[in-house]
Image (cartoon, rainbow, N blue to C red; front, side, top):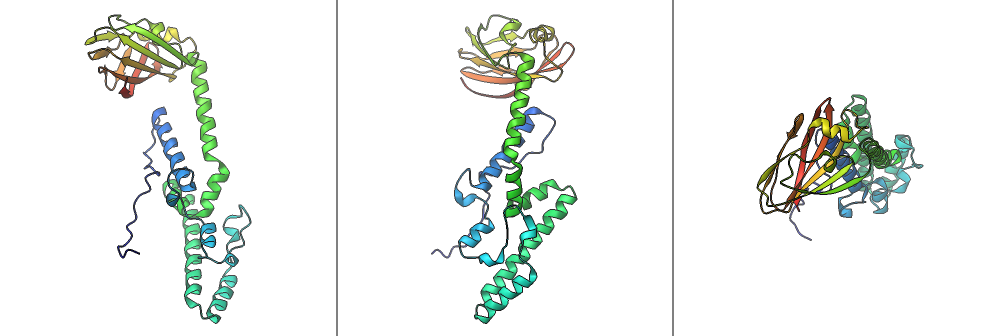
Length: 285
């Protein structure tokens, strides 16, 4: 066995959760981060050595005697052993000349009680971030999170949101081939479904103009304020293609699709005669 001391490191499958903001993309990133973290701590993602340690693990390894616990499923802190039970166990161990084991049992019980008390205090103070950290260390908190089925609730909410958007913009998917010399682009080529993929063609190194905001809105008759759909502009041409907004259209982020790349935008209905194309990323075409 190596004498080199163990140096703990972060679990790569538990991402740092960014501060959420009132934006669909940001909230989706936060939910995915929480989902990935819970899956890793529960042992459903990544290496098993990176999952949270439970009291069941400690009992299975022989580090904690089963008699220390009387925990029916889901009972929470009410199932922790009483002080009298702990004292009796410590006395028995001491009588067997196993004082080290008795001391460890007492220390484990103190740590468990401190964690439960700290979690309750943090939750009462609405310190959700600190309570979540303590929940990762507490088997009870992990069990409660599993009982609440956070992942399923998030999936249902995301599916419902997606369906609402599809109901507004109509359909699921649309693909169009559009010459890069066609400017402004016809509204029916870039709107009317929840996801639109536009394959630009031609020689490249040009600027194309979107339809006006009113033309795009007219193409989506049931669109509501703050409704969105996603569009991917693909550029297989040998030159860059610049995107210019028509009347009432704002381009937020990078307005250029470089050669042999695609760029995606969230198209949002801001208000009367106002639409935003918000850049959300790019990749190889």
